[in-house]
Image 1 (cartoon, rainbow, N blue to C red):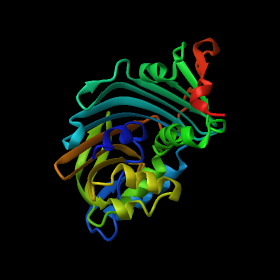
Image 2 (cartoon, rainbow, N blue to C red):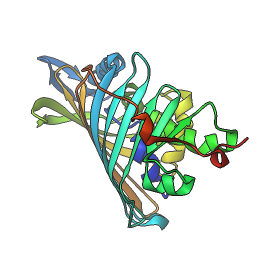
Image 3 (spheres, rainbow, N blue to C red):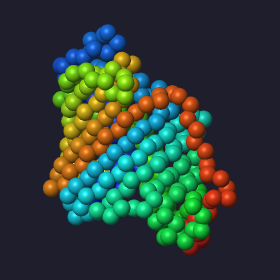
Length: 276
């Protein structure tokens, strides 16, 4: 799982909510009793209608050849009038080493703004932010930069919920309060290979790369009375490596403010990193 920490860090990616096929457990959502699998399908429908939200995410990965990695941050997301995300990673520890200053990435249309001390050092940028147009970089550079952005875009609610529809053992395990909101708690597992088949093909390959060594993922999912996902916890283990990801969701369909940094704080990606 040596790819796991950096991959899930920004994508968080596509890991939320829950699902099931044929489970018989029931729960109460909005005073209506539903089978767990049916409740999850309702969450899929509700998630597909969400156009903006915010999230707090924490990831910890241990074992493997890179040691312990930790990531903690937050996310703003909107799909209209155009796709935009603002990801702040306040804490990044990879292989036991702290990444100074964390990282931040703002995606607006086909442009991404990245604030990272490490990137600035690598690119030789003099200003806090580096601006990259995904249509201007050559194929070699785009593989790295676009992959970075693909992981961010992967963190959309609908795809995450659909992932968990691959579960065949989802069940309701009780009711809990999450962030001051009453929720129903579900638990189950899903096979990574099967989950990858239910999402957008453009995101499927990335998911399988990110979780290539975790054949099955355990999840816990908390849905509110409107069937919206409020919290998800994912965990997996394979070949001595483990990961735990927890995400809290809020602000569904509320206005979000995602703006590019001031122009005087932004450098273009140097030409020697863009290619001819």
